[in-house]
Image 1 (cartoon, rainbow, N blue to C red):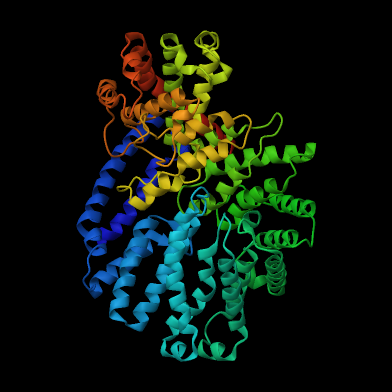
Image 2: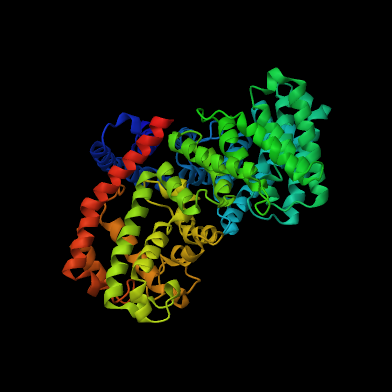
Length: 629
């Protein structure tokens, strides 16, 4: 069992190693050395984890035999270390969810009541966590739907035990688990996208029933030691969250009135026993939800809601990273900027919004990447979705690239490197084949392309800089370094082009970059890569898409830092792959331009001295934020 607990400990260590504390490092050169050494160590730790998965975990997951008590014990111990529902510390949720599913199958075979109830409880916990993680992927809601259906199956089974006779068959602990899930199961329906009416009705009925249990003499007598006050509070809290993310679930008017009633009731409940409830949640968290509920129900104006949010935002603590502090610094901030009328925005509101964007970046820069980091991710996605460019303020390009620096410096450096390599190839290719760039920057023929060469090269740089912006929504999946990527995780990662394009299309300043983000993983011939259901060949940016795709692969192939699974290839080794893939994966003109000695010299400088320079620049950026913080 110690070897399995070591798996979780290694995953924690890997997370720390991939984002070292900048205040422990004194120079830019030391920063690159630390990252390089850290990722070598990550590679070693990941190797150990892959062995544990292949030799111990996978044989159990894919077996059909009944599990022994010893095996069940180590699975439970490992799962407790991989994901903690109370602290929101997510170390390896996908593996935990797979093990939970295996235990469910075992429990269904054995039919022992206590074992089954505990397995149903853990299955719901795993599925709620997966729903919360995947709901950000608004480009493909069915990814969440698959998890939701799995969790709903467990939820419907566990709440059958609310039947009086079945309930009395259970021991005290199992009775409490059934009661907890009668409210907690609502987490399966949290969403950033529209929910079908049947799900919305189910949620209302589920929580109405759960709240009614608090006044039912049968259940109070059957579970005398259960904390009924806490139960009612949490059930009302879930109810008041139905309209989160600007009522993304699309609750109707009747439902919005019920949600507003729940919001007012939970606020009154909190105020009735401050000493008890302030240990659970800050009142500002509850009040922000209540005001949102009232706004959606038409009981207060959007302007009144916005002002109440900003008052709460002003009271935030920017130096703490517990859930209440994340609420104040990110969730309330996202809600506030989402309420603003950008067609009639005031000078004061513009100033507030700009400060909020910069404060949020500073907060994320300084936040530890363990513990409540996943809670942060849940609210940073809508923060980005609600972003608006303001006159003279931060652009979305700046917001996105600095968010990468804050979340995951290796991805930030990768984005800058891809942009520089793309610009280099573009400017040299224009000299040789200007006709490939007609249609870009308004050029109608090759002669106009030659005249606008610098403008096109600059366009290519900025488009490539934004090519991975969709990863900002799923960065917690992207930086799983401690083992091989699972198929379910790759399905999530494959959505980053669509997510990036969706965000870039929102702004005049980045709209023209959307095709580059959307298609940069599609092969030149359109027959492989992802997404598979699109054809980029009709895009007027086809040439820049193909150049960016090459630059993306080149940087990934030749960088050792940030690549825990192998040592970076040489330029010549990558060039051999480029030649081999010309006409299929890569554009056929790329080997010719990259074989020119002058171009090769430029590229070699970029991936050697240039990359070291980017590590220095990243260190200075991080150091500056840390010193100011």
